[in-house]
Image (cartoon, rainbow over all chains, first blue to last red; front, side):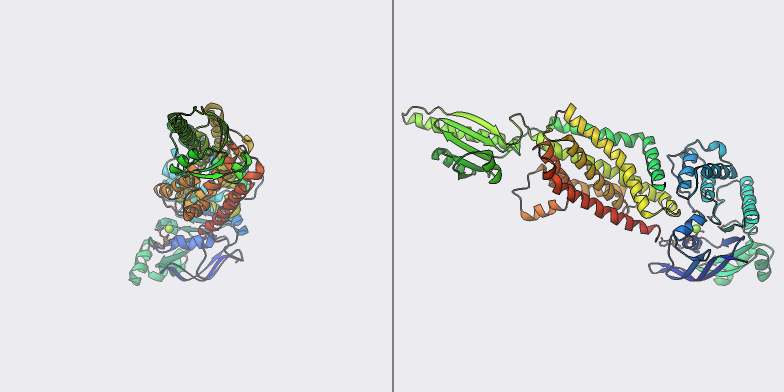
Length: 241
Length: 349
Ligand SMILES: Nc1ncnc2c1ncn2[C@@H]1O[C@H](COP(=O)(O)OP(=O)(O)OP(=O)(O)O)[C@@H](O)[C@H]1O
Ligand SMILES: [Mg+2]
């Protein structure tokens, strides 16, 4: 197995407030790696540092054996932020094309990627509409399409399915699974939805800036001797306090 | 090309925002027209510096009583006036008085003209009462800059044009970028392999296109419709305004880093913009305290307005505005470098 993302003793603080302390992680190629944990635990801070948008105060982060932050590595990473960051005055199609042109790709490839990504999130017929006229879920889907636009080998999705209806959520997860299986992409997702966490190959429980425990969903359930991940979440939290 | 995509996106965004476009292109014309009809005032002749050639000592005495400084010279020509920093030069031959006015402040010229002719009239009254033959003085007037038709607005207008370009470009680029920061698109942009320098160049050129169109519209309107003085080349006016727009652009983008909402961006206007208009030459700074003049020299608009006045009013050429333009380029370069550094907030690379 190949390691795509590696964190060693990573700590991060904002001013005096320590947000992450001594995080160690190792994420294999072709895995869907889930991060769960209460609000404010530090998940977003963690994934942002993996993308290289922030630097840790201590420790080492490597993506594809390259120390982050690294500019050319961003060509390999697709990042979907927790909030929809879209140009509201532009249409969905223009948003996609703009972000596509930030990456290295040919004109023909760009067209193909745009229609692929739009099709994946079911927005093909809405691309001509201004984003300001989109519903919340449509914006979320467009955000996801933008993260996929340059065919990255590492996908980092911060709560990707918030505000998306169950049917579309399922089709997105099916696609994520397909990307993992047939294209061997590494996918990191943060989520608060436990049945999504169940679909991950590996899970990490983040709480107060530490990784409490990690393992496959089955391992975690066995470790805490409970039936559902929901209970794992509650138990792990209870143990701490 | 990433920069091209950035420029294209900025254009698409702005073109769809009709209100902002109207603010950028029409508001300056409206305000300029209003100012045009408002400005008409009389200036102050006291503390003017005047050269005198062969002038009747009684007239000199009366002028000194008015507070003017009178210095005697051998002969009267425009070179002496400019080199000796005089406001006016008076020459008397027999009963003819020839007046040369520098006219860099037309309201002062009007006041000077009035005071001098009053003094001359008093002299002829005086000699009449003495029973002598009235000397019956005649006046001729000449101007170094402008003409008898010059109004205060003619010297004000170059400053106003520079100010509008500066103000509206500052506001629109600052708020445009602020929106990008608050909606998170800036962060998203920085998660792509785009370089920080590319982002800044894209912004400068994207907004620069609109700033250029605005400058052209304002200059054409001011000269063709309002009939403002355009003694020098219109190309130097465009060049100066374009540089001024670049300074405003980079400053607007930079200051948006320190604002967290549109409201906070607007708060910069009284601090950063309003003082500049006062120090840019609306009030002549020559007679003010040294510290006031130092403050004026840290303001970009001071240099822009100086160059615009030189070209539009005095009709000077490139050699005379090169220093001003150079300072503007330095300002822009400084702000651009600071901008590239400020983007580190989003990505440490
Ligand atoms: N730029 C910042 N400056 C100061 N504190 C910050 C900053 N970003 C995050 N924090 C703090 O770091 C902690 C972790 O935030 P983070 O966004 O990583 O949480 P999260 O696990 O993603 O939460 P959620 O599930 O609600 O998205 C929070 O307490 C937050 O207040
Ligand atoms: Mg978060």
